Image 1 (tube, helix red, strand yellow):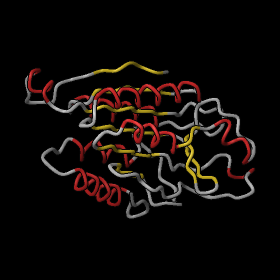
Image 2 (cartoon, rainbow, N blue to C red; image 1 turned 60 degrees about the horizontal axis):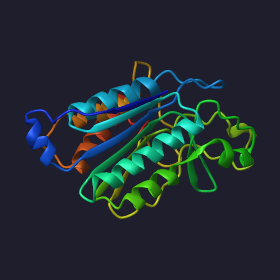
Image 3 (cartoon, rainbow, N blue to C red; image 1 turned 180 degrees about the horizontal axis):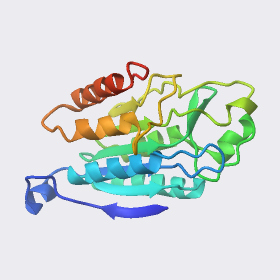
Length: 233
């Protein structure tokens, strides 16, 4: 399901002040209703991050339990919005759900994907590189890609070259990439409504008055504490 854009002025600002600021645009995707290995938390994670970013003045597009076509269309719309917003705009892409790496590239798994072997991935999944390409084409000032997508790969048993978790990605200039756990490692889906990483990220985002790098470090510290160092973003 793909919802439209929502916008709210940052807390403590007037509508006029918000309009004069650089636009902040986010696409939030959460997939959990898989036929094989369904996940409970990603939709809740996406809704939490979307609500948090809306409260901070982002224009948010929320997509949950999306097919490949819906995901690609949402990413395309996101890229077009970034380009239209101009070079001073800030973009943020967040994904929660199944993800996998193949030949050093990361793929996000849509709902309804039929993946039985390595060769199916390019056809059935969505390459994370496609998100970076949209940002690169928009030529805006600053972008964030946040992947809470390192749950166990349900397709790994049928792959010739099985790798757990996601691979490290080279970030283009002006793009910061954050992972819910270390490259090649698996993140916890969580026992509550949200994953440890998404919950920690929402807490860190609302702390306010801090550089983005410090915000991500605070989220990392909370995840390590909550998972007894079993997971390190």
